[in-house]
Length: 423
Figure 1: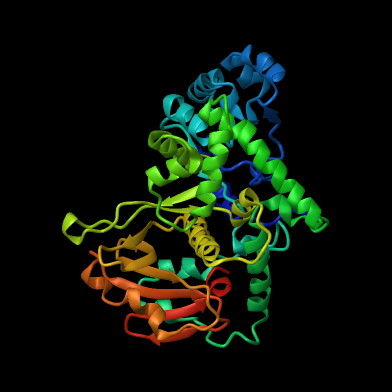
Figure 2: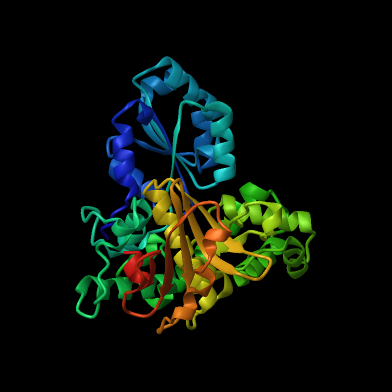
């Protein structure tokens, strides 16, 4: 099976040509395609995995001189399994200028802890997420995926640029029709690359997801938490899945999971560090505004969340919101758009699902799982300038209605379907 285009490959290709490319770290959730990407981009590098403990024993014996002689260039997978290797790689980098290494790992907390301890100032870190919608729409590795429209909007320098290119008539747009089909599949199975194998049956999809979740619990989580019993985490994982797109109170999570609030906070951190969830902080200006400080939780991949809950039915509003927010997060991060993401909840119950804050202003986003957008869907976006510290560049209502509507050109206020915005 030919793999989908990965946008990160363009960034890595640029980096590896220079000095910064001598030592690269590629991290991300398990099964997001790190090894496949490494093989494709570094075909001349031997792939050395530290997963097998018997193999680790042999590599542990090698000095930096041995590495520089035998493996001057290499892809090293699951390097966090052999912590002593970080110091050896550091010595290679400092002593032998011809050496070049790509380090892979899915256990972010262990990998990045060792990177910060041993390789600070020497290494470039890149993160690989599940497939974005433009990547899903690509036909092969060579079929370069364009950035989603949300990236163009975030990069726009003025309101006129935001409005330009908005196609209000979509019924005859063939690309939009393809995006709708891809989006509906994404909402159901998520963006893990393996699930886009055209030969997979529904049974294959379910079996892959069950195996993935079990592997995550037994390997990644065990590395992170070092727990004897996984049952409390399984409960917390399900509780978090039920709370996707909601603010999290650690006491409530602890009660639902039969654990202490400090343990609940720790489990939440593990889920974030292993790329399962996104914690969206509350927008906070000052105490007088009395804005909520609790983070909102979004699962980065909708298929993983449905797998945890063993859900096969219709997509609900909270799933739709989390899918939109996490997809925007992935696309902006992969496109290196300089911004910060927040949610907003005020003391008078005004809520905005997503604020994209850039240096020159803020884009406000509301997610509405509706086939008919009305003016009332913009009510929480009205008067935001009195609350926020930067000007509003645009207010977007992301919905299921298959058309684009420009409600106000001055702000501007726009409603548009999710697959149009994100493709």
